[in-house]
Length: 233
Image 1 (cartoon, helix red, strand yellow):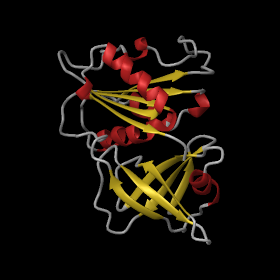
Image 2 (image 1 turned 135 degrees about the vertical axis):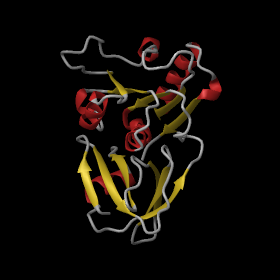
Image 3 (image 1 turned 60 degrees about the horizontal axis):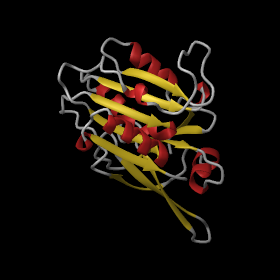
Image 4 (image 1 turned 180 degrees about the horizontal axis):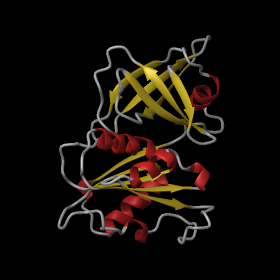
């Protein structure tokens, strides 16, 4: 491990140098395996948060109460520690940067991590594909990558970024706190005329199912909606 930085009170981004890393696609993940002195092993999957940079990859880990692996990675692991990983993995929940279709990203909580990989890949490649992120969080303090997303959204041709708050919203927010609503996804201002966006939805199972149903009801085709769910880590 070459670095660690705090994203929120419970989310850390870890930088890992991997020998002979041949790159990965935006949206892919890795498996991290920890082995205890008594031989007990635990494996968890973590989305890659950014394109590789000279053999260094990044994952963002949300510490969960009672989480075996997440607690170790966020609270115990130190720079210089070696981790056993496998990957990159996954070929379905990936963004093809050569596809000119608009992109709609819908995230619940730490489900923003693989979507941030897509946003960063778009920015680094200077791609002008229209892209919109809708990120549902509990409070403003739970906005992973908040400052970076604000900066990217302010750039000419940058992504459109919308935060939704389920518990506490900023005083300047006109939308009252609450769960994802169909109207939250009904914004075609970032799409070119007649274009059909490809949608990526990531988050807890209930959130993903709700978001996918909203998209289907709004007329999005099922084969243009890609979903990824996560559980305890």
